[in-house]
Each structure stands twice: as C-alpha cells, then as structure tokens.
Image (tube, rainbow, N blue to C red; front, side, top):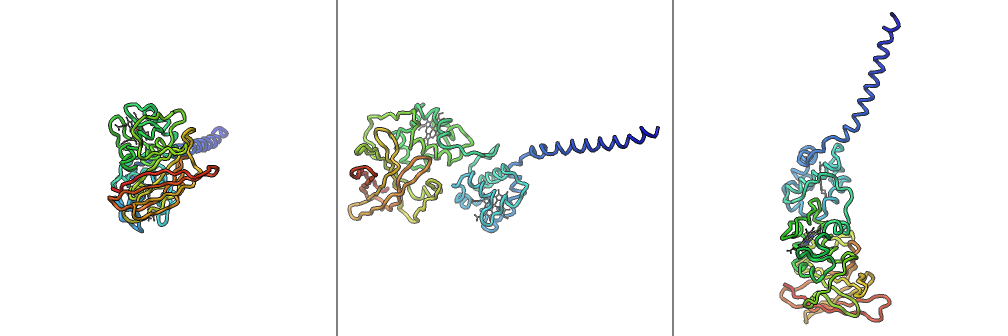
Amino acid sequence: MGLPFASVPAWASVSAVVLFTALSAFSGPADAQRRERPGKEVVDAACGACHLSGKDGAPRIGDAAAWAARTGQGLTMLTEHALKGIRKMPAHGGSTGVSDLELQRAIVYMVNNSGGRWIEPAAMRTSTLTSETIVQQQCAACHQGGKDGAPRIGDRAAWTPRFAKGLDRLVASAVHGHGAMPARGGMPDLEREDIRDATLYMFNYGLPAVAAPQPPAAPDPHHKLVSGLDVYFGMMRADALRSQGAKAGGTKLSIPAGRGYYHLNISVEDNKTRAPVTDAQVTMQVSDGMSVETKTLERLAANNAVSYGNFFRFTSGNSYNITTEIKRAGMPSPVTAKFEFKAP
Ligand code: HEC
Ligand code: HEC
C-alpha cells in the first residue's frame, strides 16, 4: 500500500503545476482585453494632477483658450505628443498603465471640457486616412455626381463662391452639416482636419474619372485663363489661418502678427490636360494705385496639391489690383494674370 500512497502527492503536485501554468497562460489575453477606461476615469487617475491646476504650463481643463491654441494640431498629433511627452509634459502623462486609446480618450475628454466638441474614439485611430481615400470612400457618393446640389469634386466654379465665406466657416458648415449635407459628411469619427483636407482636395483636384463640367456661367472673378493656363486666385484672412494652426506640407506657415493681413494664393492648372502646374516661379504685385508691393510666392504643397502664396497687408475699404507673373522653365515668356481684391 506504500507505493500508491506515496504516489498521490507526486501526482497532485504535477497537477498543481499544470493548473498554475494554465492559469498564467490565461492571464495574458485577459490582461490585454481589460476594459479600456473612458476619458474621465483616465483624467481623474492620471492627468488631473497637472491639468486641473495648470501646473508647469499644462493646459488647464476648462481653459478654452489654452486648449484652442493646441487643438488645431488635431487629435492624432496631440496624442503623439502625449505619448512621447512634450517639454514638461511627461510621456504617457507619467503613467505607464495608461493605454494609447485611454490616452486619446483622456485628451478628448479634456478638450470637450474646455470648449471643444470632439468625439471620444471607440477605437484607436491608428492609420490616418488620406484625403483622397476619405473623398473616394465617403464624400464622392454625393459630391461626384452633384447629388442634391452638392458641389462637384473639381468643379471650381461651384466651390469658389463657397470658399468666399472663408475656409474656416466652410469647414464648420461641413462639420455641423446643413441641408442635404450630413454632419461630418456622414463619417462621425472624421476629425475637423480631415474634413478640411477633404474639402480642399475636392476643390483642388477632382477625381480622375470626373471631368469637371464647364458651366457657361458668369465669369468667375477668381479664375483667369491665360496662354493655356487656368489660374485660380484665393485669399484667406491671416487670423482665420492662425485659428486653424495652418500648415502647408507639414511645415507651419509663419503668419504675420497684426491687422489686415491676408494670405493670397494662386493655383495653376494646364487647361488641356488639367494637370496642376507645380514647377512655376510666381511673383505677385499688389497695388492700390498709391503704393505697390511685390513678393515672390512660396510654393505650398499639401495633399499632392500645390499652390503658391504669401501674406500681404491691406487697408480696409481700398481696392487693389493684383498682378501675378508665372514663370516656368521651357515657357517662352512669363504669363500674367490679373485679379482685383477689395479689402472689406
Ligand atoms: C506631471 C504633469 C502632467 C501630467 C501628469 C499630465 N500632463 Fe499633459 N501636459 C503637462 C504640461 C506641463 C503640458 C504643456 C507642455 C508644453 O506644451 O509645454 C502638457 C500638455 C499636454 C497636452 C498638449 C500637447 C500639445 O501638443 O500641445 C496634452 C494633449 C496632454 N498634456 C495630455 C495629457 C494626458 C492625456 C495626461 C494623462 C494621461 C496628461 N497630459 C498628464 C503636464 C502633465
Ligand atoms: C449624403 C450626401 C453627401 C455626402 C456623403 C457628403 N456631402 Fe458634402 N454636401 C452635400 C450637399 C447636398 C451639399 C450642399 C448643401 C447646401 O449648400 O445646401 C454639400 C456641401 C458641402 C460643403 C459646402 C458647405 C457650405 O457651407 O457651402 C462642404 C465643405 C462639404 N459638403 C464637404 C463634404 C465632405 C468633406 C464630405 C465627405 C467627408 C461630404 N461633404 C460628404 C452632400 C453630401
């Protein structure tokens, strides 16, 4: 009887090891699938220490101005800064137990309690969609064929008057939706920046399949056809750009301080091929009859589109003549396009 008795503890101990191993094998996935906390919980636990008081210059929860100065970067960029840390903001807010998604939710929570209106993400935004993808997957459903009066992709004549109210307001209108245009174009997780870029994309380009109809409309004061080039003129108030945290091709525009500044820009397209002209040298002369200012326009690239722009200062009420000179290698002589601008 000695043998079976002696073997029981040995068997029992093996089984305990098996059980222990089985348990620890389970604890891995169980950990990974733990509940992702909503933003408020994360903020209370990990961010409030600095962001409630504004310690070390942390944007304070409830301070709309402090957050507005940062939200222009978009959620993706803010998350990156919070993940890696920025100046006195420690990486992950100093709490390694905070997952990336929780961090993102915490940021959205703080923004929304500081005058913002962001949507707390259900899942981590890992890949940022390109404007082209957003437009093709979503906006094209209506904007390609002009459904319910949607301005068509690439139809500048339809878009230009809408841009006249300012990019900021145009984007706000797309974010909130109006008429048959659904809020955020029907994609609730799109960021404001995505919508802005998708809108610019629709204005700037047009899907290859869409031949932009050429309406025999009244002449568009923002468009000139000269020597086979379509030249489009645009302007934006400097302070509107500032509130957007404007960037061109990843670099922040240095926006001059002071009143009356506008960013004037032109984009150029080959009238036959519709190919954007990306290799031009452009100068712009602005004159109100008394004084003349001439500047070289910087080449601005964003979303594969190129425009040329610079800041000019205007005195309100005055009318200005704007003369752009476009030079290209291989072009026998510069092309000149003239526009008018009345400073409001
Ligand atoms: C030890 C203090 C501290 C804690 C804790 C902390 N922050 Fe911060 N945070 C800061 C400071 C300071 C700044 C301002 C950094 C700067 O721009 O100079 C900041 C800035 C930020 C910004 C703006 C970054 C930008 O690019 O403008 C975000 C977003 C942010 N924090 C998120 C969080 C989140 C989310 C948590 C909690 C998980 C957190 N912070 C916890 C100190 C803290
Ligand atoms: C279900 C159809 C539909 C979808 C999808 C849609 N739009 Fe629109 N959109 C419209 C219509 C219709 C208008 C014109 C509304 C009006 O002015 O009455 C419009 C107008 C706009 C305007 C101009 C707003 C203004 O104030 O002049 C912008 C900008 C815009 N859409 C952006 C987008 C973007 C970006 C997307 C994709 C993310 C998108 N739309 C998806 C139907 C749609």
